[in-house]
Length: 227
Image (cartoon, rainbow, N blue to C red; front, side, top):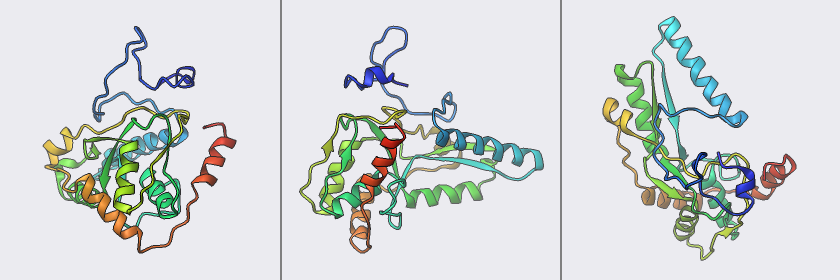
């Protein structure tokens, strides 16, 4: 994790704890050391461990799927806790700029809900998935600033993102999936490109009502000292 004192100066690069040299991002494998630095992360880690333990103890076929950033039609655009994609689209629909923390060059892994369904079906149907943990992402890192810009393009809005230079405590700089295991063992390869998925959610979002509650959520984070 990056020290808050470093991020407060606008230095966003993760650094080697020994020599302080900036390090290069790499895909996160299922075997990567877990460092759950929030209650949210810890609950997911514990739920996975308990589920696999119960499955092995009682002979119940069990699979743990680690979803990365899922997006797509029918997700709530009015709930600011359902992901950055919904937040950005809701802001744009109300002619407001997407708000981006840090410098916008932090990356995440986005996967369409259609591919999530395919991964779920493979996990249900393939016996070799039993007792296994799999990443489910695209394996492609995309900058948050890039997400905001592409969202504006497909939403038909000439609105640039607001790059705040602020940060949220505990946020990692880069996170994207190593997809080797699920590809090799279950034959799963994502089929929906980021551009295709963005186009679909932009078209769908015009057909539903939404409420921009980003400011309310931000106020809650500030009250808790997380922003």
